[in-house]
Image (cartoon, rainbow, N blue to C red; front, side, top):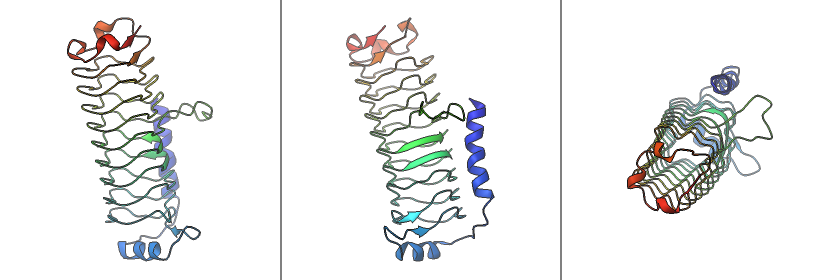
Length: 258
């Protein structure tokens, strides 16, 4: 696992440090965006955009592939549908940003601020440990491992210690992700696929897990206090006494535990 995550970080670092991209300020970025259209996107590919205030901008006609956006402020910006593969996004402020249907592959987004961000329908493989995704929209997100394309070993989403409190993860797929000690309190996980996910120490207090699939997951020390477990599948759980908080969970009798 450590080797896989290291490889993801190394890929992003190599692509960003190997380029001779010039530093750009907000004024130059705005000029490029103003002159861009669908057929002629603003060229921000592999550019150094670290520590820049890029809030409230529309990047839908921009090429940000492989760019370095560390610590930049993209609050309320529109990045819907973009390819952000191999970009460096650690500690970026994406709060209230539109990242719907984006592709984010081989990227480190650790400690990023994604509160209230729209990530619906997005595709993510990379590291998002300690990121703040509270009240974010991840409905229909495809953050599961692609088992047909694993030539570099198992590449998956890592959200260890991430804050997903109040987030909407309905119909999302996190197949084989690692989400140790993630906070899902009051989150919506209706029909969410969590097959084979490491959820040890995760907090599901007062979350809606109706119809969620937790088959083959690691639930050691996971907390389900007050959670709605109607139709939640716990296939492979041999001893449900190890599931913390079941005595206060809702619809435990309708959960599928075997």
